[in-house]
Image 1 (tube, rainbow, N blue to C red):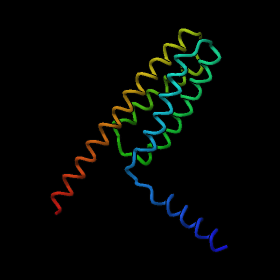
Image 2: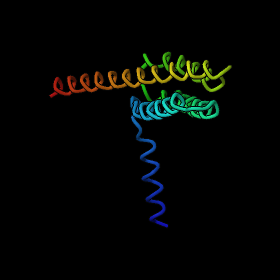
Image 3: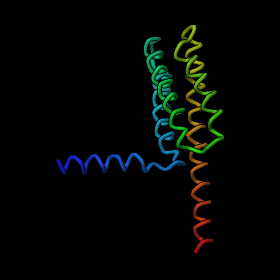
Amino acid sequence: MNKLLIIFVSVLSFLTNTNENDCSVVYNRATYALSHSKKALKSNNFDHQLYYSGKTLESYKKIADGMKYCDCTDAIEFIEDITNDAEKAADPVDWDRGRYYSKKVYLNTQELITMLDLWTSTRVQQDEALGTQNQ
């Protein structure tokens, strides 16, 4: 019973110690979205395109949830725009329209990942600058 209590407390403490400014969750979900959108582009039939576009849309819904832990405010509106395109890719009028939105989501997801990389590197440089000033 004690072992179970220790495991429970350690898991609970891990969950409550998440960094409020941590964009790693959003970054990880964006890489999943990138993977799914790439598969949607490479699909050779309409059903596969719809399936992977749906997976991309699910990833973007999770990305929106993860933004509460990330203070990269520049990305919020961009994520909303990509989500709208992902919805259009997941429920297209025809094959060509689905490919158009899948490609748009794919390219914008790459840009989102770059944006998160730049934000993180800027944030690290600011933290390092503050750390050297406090010493």
